[in-house]
Length: 114
Image (cartoon, rainbow, N blue to C red):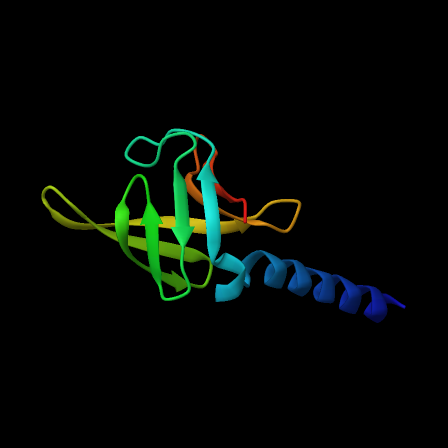
């Protein structure tokens, strides 16, 4: 009986880990809206559109490219002093929609709307 409980717990932990860390590109592509102000990031209601060809359009960063790696996304953009990048963590909310967290301390993120 104890082995079944232990196996169930290990399976549940593995399932939760996979749920929180596995994102396919098709899950990430779409339109996102910011919920708050970051120090050097987007303002409230800014949009970020992630396209299938690894490019994006944003009110904050303009147009550029992005890369996905595990549960992070890197946005590459040009600014007045050259090139820069911005890294965000990909998480899920309770409704299975991904969100891109850009300020952990103040819980600011982009929420997927479509």
